[in-house]
Length: 150
Image (cartoon, rainbow, N blue to C red; front, side, top):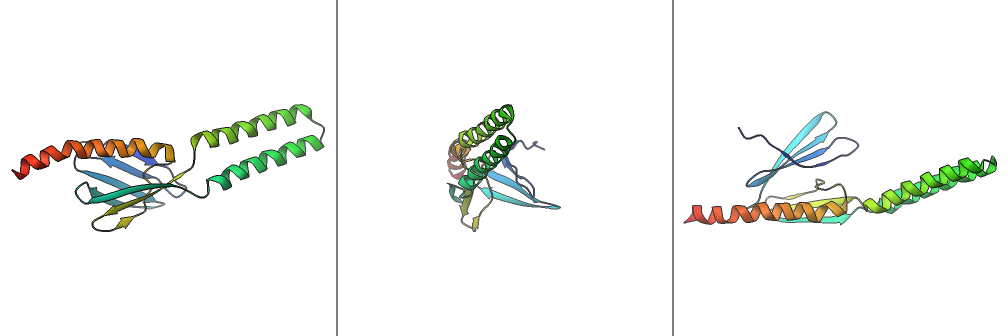
C-alpha cells in the first residue's frame, strides 16, 4: 500500500485539517475535537478552488497593537524606561511578524457534488503555491487519462 504524504496542514483551535495529494485526487482529514471527517476530491470532479482573505486579520493586528500600547503605557506610568523600550520593541516585533505573514485564508472548493469550506492554506501567501502543485498534478494526470480513453 502506498504511504500517504501530507500535502498541507492547517492548524485550527478545534483540530487540524490535513490534506494529502494523490495521483488523481485530494484527500482531507478534517479533524474536530474527538472525530474526523474524510473527504476525497477527485480532480475530474473539481470545478474550482477559491481563496480569499479572512476578515479577522485586521482585528488581530489591531488587538496586538492595542495590547502592546496598553502595556507600554502601564510601564510608562511606573517610570520604567527599560521596560517601556522592551515592551515596545516586543510589540513592534509581534505586529511586524503578523503583517509579514499576511492574512489568513478562507477556502472554497466547488465540485460537481457540492461546495465545501475546508481550509486548504493557513495564510493567503501559501495559496498560489498549493494551486500550482495541484495544477501540476492534474497536468500529469491528463495524458494518462487520454491514453486510457483511446
